Length: 235
Image: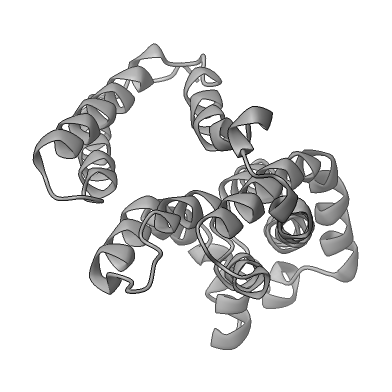
């Protein structure tokens, strides 16, 4: 049985996770810059945009909730959209349970604060539990730092960008999602849930109340992915 100390990452593990994630996290600066500009265009103050990025740290959900921002904020749709977009974190967090269950509750949940797709995927490729936790936390710090840098640049220079579309900043979110779609060449069947999600979202935009298309698309795509028979990979 693995002893509890062997599960705890050392400072070296954290530094190694930060160092490995640093090159990839540089691309997050552009994503954060686009959010900072979009937040100012939507009426948020610089402080509000920075606080949202610092405390929420969920790029796709932050972009989605900007459409709901105004003098009155519909709290229930905002919570539902955020939950639908970030529901995958429930599964990603569950994969770390064997490595976290021996830690005190405070440290256990603190380790998951900076959980994202990138540091989760990199951590899952590591060998030892301590190395995985080091990549999770250290890599998360790298991603969070560059996300904050990008948001800071966006709010610093966003007031001077009256037309974000001229610089392609309004298309970054769509390009990011498209890259996720076409980047997985291992299994073409992954296209089916994405197509179902897109069709469901378009139908919801046409026939359902405003802002429900994000929830409908996410649920439809997730259900399709759950019911889709998966191919067995050869060992």
